[in-house]
Length: 222
Image (cartoon, rainbow, N blue to C red; front, side, top):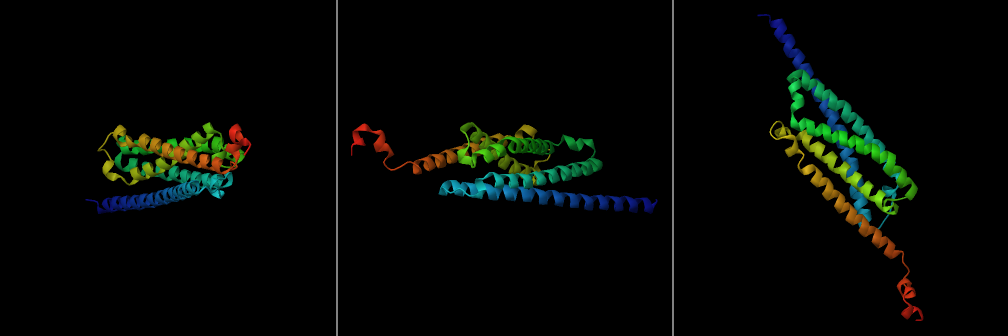
């Protein structure tokens, strides 16, 4: 028996394992950066909508900076994700691509990428023109809220799939993604209601105290 060949095999396997570990680590860091920024921005915006404030978190400059950082993280995720798949295919063969969990994660990241393009090409220009989320036209505001809900849910869902080893080969693609659209719809409806409430309050605060009396002929003489 040639022990040199065996030693070389184990050395090569160890090298691949450490290489995969490094790629997974970079993948994890990029995911954490993106999720941290999205979560921080969303929480801050929700607080401002409740308090009736309007700061840099709702203006176009902040949104553009956020989008650039998240887009950069998404590029790193694509590169490291494809590298992980390449390493795993080399170890497990092409059958690895049939894993429903992997297919679900790829589908969500593709949707995140397309959604990011729409945010950059449609939502950001509209925000720059309007000045804030509450000043957007109704249709564009609803689109921005839906795209935001899709982005937030997708990042967390993809992260869950990334650490969900027990999901591998255990459930079908439809079962793994069953809760995904429901969470997006729930997030969109919650933000739509909150934004409309904040807009109504803002318009109410901007109405003069005697406006209703001036509209009523019976009270106009008082």
